[in-house]
Amino acid sequence: MKNDVLKGSIFLALGASCYGMLGTFVKMAYHDEFNLAEVTLSQFALGFAGLLILTLFRKRKPETETTTSASNIKSVFKLIGAGTSLGLTSIFYYMAVQYVPVSVAIVLLMQTVWMGVIVEMILHKKIPGSRKVVAVFIVLIGTTLATNLLHQSVVINWTGFGWGMMAALCYTATMYSSNTLELHFPPLKRSLYLILGGLIIISFIFHASLNQNFSYRIFLGWGLVISLFGTILPPLLFTKGMPLTGIALGAIIASIEIPVSVLMANILLNEPISLFQWMGVILILLAVTLMNIGNRKKQKLPMVGAN
Image (cartoon, rainbow, N blue to C red; front, side):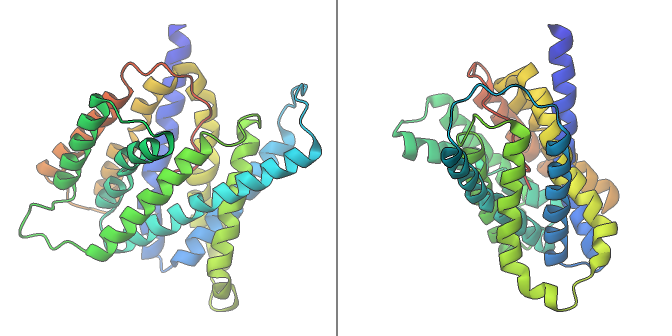
């Protein structure tokens, strides 16, 4: 039993670390003169192709469900529709990375912690417990420190700040839909349809870019890296890890995405990280831990591409 938990923890840590590296890889692609359309289209196109291949070759279990073809088609369209928020999350997050440091962008994305509490309160008409309320305030304090809002010598790029908050809002919608819709589908197939939804909305937004100076070189370079770390590996690792750890421990381990993102940006992009920013990151991690300690609910399915 302990070995299973350890194994699951390793899978989750690796999956979360993949997400944490993503922002840095995207910014490095920008430095190589690739643009937002090229980054997002290559990520989701290659990610969809990779998941499709894995879905076709996966071992099929005997199906016992009695759902009709019509209801299955309806379920597929629901997942594809929900996947549009995943595509928008990537667009807004990668827009934020253009204006603010990766370490700030990931902190803004994690505002989904308190946004999720509000969504839960509105949809389920349930007042959050004191522990969640305290966790929300801790996240807000941590965000203030991690984004240097109190540092008078730092000029805040409000455009990047706005894109980051939009990414968090879409990420909240993605998390809610990916953990409530069509749970009878195998996790890999659900991920496939969600990624397809993201690919469709991204193609719709950036279709004009394909007729201009679109650099298809990205498909053989950064596109492969970003799709691997952003849409292929994480769902597989979360699928294997979350059932072994449970939702509470799993959510705590998954929050390693934040420090990994900050460290990667510091090492590969030379982004300076102050002591106050590290204190903010630690506070956000504590808030995630506080919200999930004692949560014994069964995990419904793994997270799909966070960015």
